[in-house]
Every structure is written in C-alpha cells, then in structure tokens.
Picture (cartoon, rainbow, N blue to C red):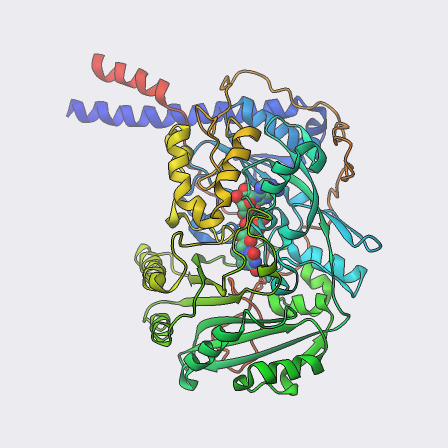
Length: 637
Ligand code: FDA
C-alpha cells in the first residue's frame, strides 16, 4: 500500500515538476523575444503562449489533418506569428538559446503535421502574416513571401497578366513555404516542371539568425533549399520565382468512366500515352469511391495549354477511346483554370485568395509511388477492387503523368530527383470522419495494405516517394525524440532519404552538415547533419542565457544586400479574411457524371470561422534532473 502511495506521489510530482520546467522555458523564451524592441512593440499581436485565449484558434487555423489535432497531440509552448524578418531572427535565436525546437509553418498542409507538432518542447513560427506578393510583369518574375498560399500567388499573377503563370500545386490552399521546399507540382508540370524549378533567388534566415540570399548562401545551399525538404536548412522568408509564359487561352475538359464501363481498358491506354503526349497536354486521373450508386469513378482531368481546336484534334487522335466531344471542352485563362482544378467555391480570382480554416477537419493518411513500367490490367483490377472495400469511407488514388518538361530536367538539377524514366506518380489517400480508434486503425490498415499490394508494380531500389506527400511509414529520424547521435540519424535518415531524393541524398547530407552543423533545423524527416553531436540541439543549452536577438525595430538592416522586401510586410493584409475553406476539391463522392475537375482533399469548402476550443496541453520536458530527485525520494522515504 505504502509503495503504491509512493509511486503515485512520484508520478504526480514528476508530471508537475516537468510541466513547471516547460513553463519556465516558455516564460524565458517569451522574455527573450521581448528583449527585441521590434518584437516588444508588437508582442500582443505576434506572440501567443499556450495560455493565451487566442492560442488554440491560431494553432488550429491552418491544421488540415485531424490526426494531429487531438487532445493528446503535443502542443507548442508558444506560437509566434512574425510580421517582419527581424521577428523571425529573434524567434530563431531565442529558440536556440532556450533549447526549444522550432517548427515553421506556412500553409500547415504537412501530411504528418510536422510543421506544428514535435515530440520535444517546441515553438511554432507561423508565417501566416507574411504573405506579400509582388509581381514584376516586365521581367516575368515574382517575389513571394512563404506565408502566402498558392491560390494567392495564382490570383496575383492572373490579375497582373493573362499570359503569365506559376507552376505550383493543383490545390489553392497549400502554403508556398512548404510546397516549394519539397518541389511542388500542379497542372503545368508537363509544360513547365515544378515550382522549385523556377526559383531564382531566396531570402532565408539561417540557424545563426542571419538573413541570407542566393549570393551569400552560395550555389550549394541554394540548390538544396529548392526541394530538399522544409525546416531543414533555414526559414525561407521569401522566394523569387521566374514566371512562365502561357497562351491567353487554355482548354479544360474532363471525362469519367465508372466500374460498369470497364475502366481498366482506358487506364491501360492512358498508361501507354500519357507521358509521351506533347508537353501542353496533361491527362491526370483521379479515382474515388462514388455513392448512389456505389462505384469507382475514374476521372480523366485534362488541361491543354492552348486553344480548344488544337486540344480537340490532339485528344481525338491520341486517345479516341475517351470519346471527348467539343461540348465538354472549355476555354479560359490559365488563372481561371486553377479555380476549376482546385474546386474552389467561386468563379473570380479573388476566390482563390480567400483563407479561412477548414470547417470540420477530417482525418487522412496518404502515401505515394512512382511507376516506371505499365501496371498490368490484372493489378489495376485488384486496385479498383480494394477501393470498393466495405467500411472504407473515402479512398482516392491519383495518377499524375510525367514525361514532358519533367523528363527534360536533369534528375540532379534540384534535389527533387523523379524525372526521366517515370511514367507517372501515384498518390493513395484515404479520409475518414469518425473519432474512433477502430475506424482509424481500419483506414490506416487499408492504405498500408494497398501500398503493400502495389509494391510489385512500382519503382524499386529505392521504392521512390514524393517528399511533399510526407509519409512517416517509410522511415523516420531517430534524432527528434531519442537523442541518437549523428551516425545513427544518418543511417535512419538514409532509409527514407533515398526514397525521396535518390542519388541527391548524399549531397544534401554534405550541404546540411556544412550549413547547419548543430542540426538546429530538424524534424522527423529532415536531412541529418553529420556534425551534430547532440542532434536537434545547439551546442549551448544554457536556458538562462539571454539570446542575442536583433534589437532593431525594422528588419535590422540585415538583408545581406539582396533585393528582397524588408519592410513591415503586410501586417493585417487580409490573410485571415475570405470564405474559402480547404477548398482543394469538392469531391462529394457522388459524382460520376463526368464533370468532376477538382483534385482531392477534404471536401467542404467551409465558410466558418474556427471554433476556439479548450485544448489539453500535453507537454514533454527535459526531465532527467527531476527523475534524479524523485529517485532520491523513492529510495529514502
Ligand atoms: P506546412 O506549413 O505544414 O509545411 C510543410 C513543411 O515545410 C514542414 O516541414 C514545415 O516545417 C516546412 N516549412 C513550411 N514553411 C517553411 C519555410 N518558410 N521555410 C522552411 N521550411 C518551411 N503538393 C503538390 O506538390 N501539389 C499539390 O497539388 C498538392 N495538393 C495538396 C492538397 C492538400 C489538401 C494537401 C494537404 C497537400 C497538398 N500537397 C500538394 C502537398 C503539399 O505540397 C505539402 O503538404 C507541403 O509541404 C505543404 O506546404 P505548407 O506550407 O502548406 O505546409
């Protein structure tokens, strides 16, 4: 009995003392930030400790996956929403000096929640207030801050010119900071490649709090930052993009085949031609379970970068089996086509820019594969059958064709390696709504079973994957939670690293080691630094030291002579207004009439505002000291 009492006491003391440790870290971090006059003068608008009444609504604003928004999900000690570069510098330096991990969030779409969840005590740097976009039509470039969404960029480019475009995601709500850090593909991938292929310059805050540009970073780091993964080399504040030229008119069309129409023969034909078509034509396939009646809808979503006449003759010649007629083809500007593909509520470019939290965020899990030789009909039939499995709410499988520009760019041009030789990329996705462990396990099992089933038909050695479809099933660093040394992390990282980066992984490790030797920027799938003795930590872990946070009021005059914006950056520039929710799709699962254009995602384009709900804050703190005290108590009471 007395032993039981002692153990209970030990547990309670351990928990409270650890929480007190986190409270101290939280207070010290906030104090450190307020040493910067720039932060101090804005503190109530940019610094949100976990007991701030706005904390939960700010945290939840950009969460896209309910798997990482539960009562037991670790929460940050503080959220910082910087409005200028000096705020970011302060956050980096203060996080280091107080041994806190920093997670940076732009759009919050990370599939595994890595931009707002960490197993170690952490702060979130949320760039939502930094979304300035400046389009230079004459030079066909744009400077874009990382906190902007892809939709905001599309809208600004579209409003500036009918003949300029930006090749990024299919979905408008994705954040620029994360998507470009991992590549970023959209409907122009066969025409122009990835978003990361078009980066001309950057503004980055490094682990020492310095503001760097392409010239001061050097070409190695500039290479790595264009696709080597987010939260790995520094905080990318802004990107300069080379825009691409498009005709004033593009053409969209869409055709759906259902199980009853024997989709396998269409899929077989598509596999033969999709990667060999002219660069201007994209035929992307979205397969999902439709209801009323229950079937699998196989939707061929097409974009032709050119006129309807040319599109019609090309599709009738190359894929007559689809039965495309002029009536299902629509001409529009490229910017208008992005509204259709994203399935946004609305028809104007303004609707692309709106940013509100998703109403009723649901659970999802995704995985990816690359295909280098056609998948046999029998395997395709098996995949369709798995999609019909009872109890699986919203399964999706998406085929994105490669070839075109994707095959013309060398596989080591940027870290994203999936170029020539790939026929198409697969994304497997599954969504569910119930708050039930059983339902959750069933859906997670389903997608893992599908992935296992497809193993014989996709790329191997390595089985390649797309980093922006983050999947912790394929491997995870040891460093983030267990404090493994550099060698261990390298071996662990190689498992997932070669899948995402193939031969570019080793170069990324070398660059990371030289640029961020203490591995300050890290997460479960960040490139390891071989120089990090204690990974994820700085060499100084003195929590009482005061950081050398910049004290200037502006950006501290620290732009390293580059040409990026250094002003106050759009404080209150409307990023929280508007009425588009997740907006990526609109697939209501009952559409088998050939009209579906949007990609997939969470559906509901909610018009709601976020519910501010009390959240249980689960904190993890450095406890070794307290355990020693407790051991003493146990031994001597
Ligand atoms: P988020 O803010 O979660 O960041 C993702 C990662 O990048 C995190 O590790 C984060 O720390 C890091 N990061 C963010 N900002 C950074 C910065 N400024 N500097 C350094 N690191 C930073 N992809 C695609 O290519 N084409 C598509 O069409 C789509 N569509 C799509 C739809 C939906 C609904 C989702 C949920 C996702 C996609 N994606 C996608 C995948 C998307 O590209 C991927 O999730 C991106 O990482 C999201 O970037 P965010 O900034 O939104 O995420």
